[in-house]
Length: 377
Ligand code: MG
Image 1 (cartoon, rainbow, N blue to C red):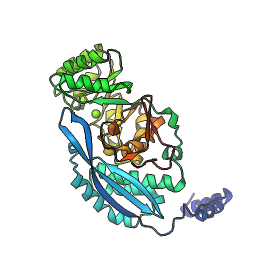
Image 2 (cartoon, helix red, strand yellow):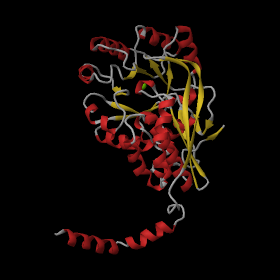
Image 3 (spheres, rainbow, N blue to C red):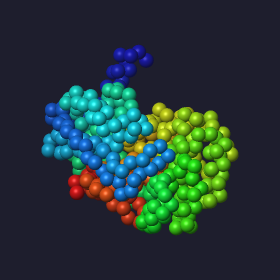
Image 4 (cartoon, helix red, strand yellow):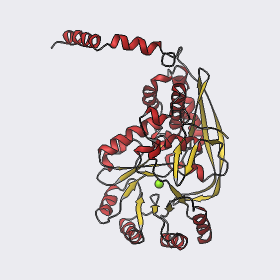
């Protein structure tokens, strides 16, 4: 068929399918025909105080400065959050730079073209995914609020299927670790940070308080040679650890593959995976991936990652940084697509400026309110 014939056939088929009627009915809907393009944006930095000094294999901190973004149009405001992470060359300042670079896109943005915006945003800078994430969450929150539905409903997901979330225990002195584990009574799974010289002591200390609670372990790239990593994982497996996250540096794929062939418990990629483009090469090396909105650059990329990873047979963990209820509520929208949840960021801080996630019986449930469902405290 020649091109002109093909186009004519298309046009006839569209008429037969009633498309001309469909298009006016969509544009007649005031919500979807939203007037002039362009959104208003403002942002602010908020300091989140950690309940305990937060120590992992890489670094230690008492406060976290996150950037909150607000996108407004037609009297509706979408809220987003960036948790910049120095591991990915992000600071609050670099995040604000990224947000400012996006201003020309935002000034002409038709919010209903949110998928196109997600792609355009990738083009304005490499990396700086926390800033991109804040904009994407704010835009999707606006979409949900405009339609009057929570995002999980827009995506056809079942909020009741939120899996148990783990609660993270950072590296610390034994007495503090014991206290944290005692205080973590309401959480049904613990994620223990390891990757240092005293890993066995960390686990033994946790087990002295909670002999039977399921535990997962995150080495945050802390083991630098494969023999050490293998020895540690074999010991952890014997001590009832369910899986190990990022045992070796992200770029040591061959070594990680070597380990995986010698152990029985799953290995989950975290620092090794940012966006969907990283996933195919990880499928033979890891059993699952830890998707974080901040690494992905937002909810829309996280969804693309989930579908790709599932198609490759990988387990899906959805994790977080130190974040308020804004980013946690956004991640909680993905509820029924998650095999392992690690959504404890808002539970690790003492001054959450927002509410909207319900922690019930070890699970983080998304609110039934529209969008991501959060409101200021
Ligand atoms: Mg991790």
